[in-house]
Image (cartoon, rainbow over the protein chains, first blue to last red):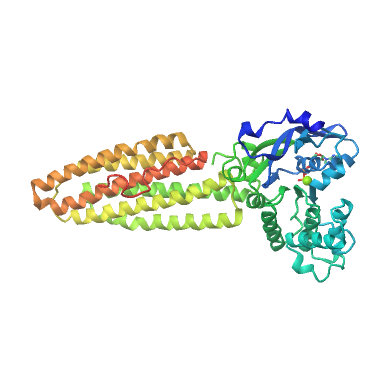
Length: 270
Length: 232
Ligand SMILES: Nc1ncnc2c1ncn2[C@@H]1O[C@H](COP(=O)(O)OP(=O)(O)OP(=O)(O)O)[C@@H](O)[C@H]1O
Ligand SMILES: [Mg+2]
């Protein structure tokens, strides 16, 4: 099997003494129609922590995020190499079951994108196609728990049959988070989840992220340095397709090693 | 500042202004220490009076630094080197303000001493004062140049100042034991010496803050806990 093969290439956590990374990227390269967008990205994503990806526009943050749930597969001319290990398996392997992977790795996008269906159906859809509920009662339970965890249950419990698109932007984003966690993923990817939200809705999402990390491993792309500083424990700075620096968030924002990191986060030219 | 410019130019201008204000405060504090001692040595009460009045300018500058820092923290949300520069500026302004207060206290005591005949180790006090003013001067040069290596060397000189202070204190004790009529004057001088030694401590703090600003590392502070070492 693949996992026994890959297990030997894994840096043993017993040797390093570090907590087991949920995801471990090694030398990930991505190019779009021959134009390289990511260069040898190696990055560990620690379990039950929030990792923030920061960097200037076009540096490859979304590209890296899309590697983790293989969303790049659907882009014509996109070629990926390297490994991303999860549970000892290389999820970039073409033979990996992408549907199964996407159950384990959920994603929340910049613009809230509820399906044009009821609030209930938005959440129930994933568990249903992945066969996570045996009957209607179980499905109802999953919907309630997911909305509860996303901090939306109280606001929508009396109108589950109304369209998800009728909610406010902040509520829609929490609906999308509820949808992402409804299939019990291990990892939740968020690509600028608050950029369309006001400060109050943003604060609620940030509070939610803080609660969700108990159950999930979170990777968030954000253009707000303050947001990265507030929500994450680890921060990776991407620049022109490279990971320039990765470290404890506190260190990155008070005393980064690389002048390019300092230049970027202080608002100077990198 | 050594670092290159922000995309938002007014931000760089605000940081530069902070440095300028600190440099100005430093110049005033250093002059106040030197003048207060000179007023004592020359028995020049006018000069002492000017030092006392001049302290207001230092206080006003500190208040201005503090309000600029608060504004920058709120509006700029500084990060990394900028954050350290701004935090260090606030602390350094505080140290300079205290140094100014000590100079003012020396000036007040010299006004009193000028009313009685000359006694005591005035030249040893002048010597200590010179050491302290020089330390202040050099640490401020290092601040303007953003040079942590110089700051670290200046910081080490604090030991010399402590030693000079201790020996001055002993000398004052012998004066007092020999002639109890000098006790009042010598007690003022004990405080003057202590004030100078404290200014040296603040210069040390400034050096430590500068090292933090530049390198992001805290040097082990030798002076924060009062009573930890032999306080004279
Ligand atoms: N679908 C695509 N087809 C071709 N090139 C792409 C595609 N997606 C991204 N790229 C290119 O790959 C590079 C990295 O883009 P990516 O979207 O990952 O950047 P990003 O860091 O997420 O930027 P932003 O902060 O603007 O979202 C860019 O040069 C971009 O033009
Ligand atoms: Mg992006």
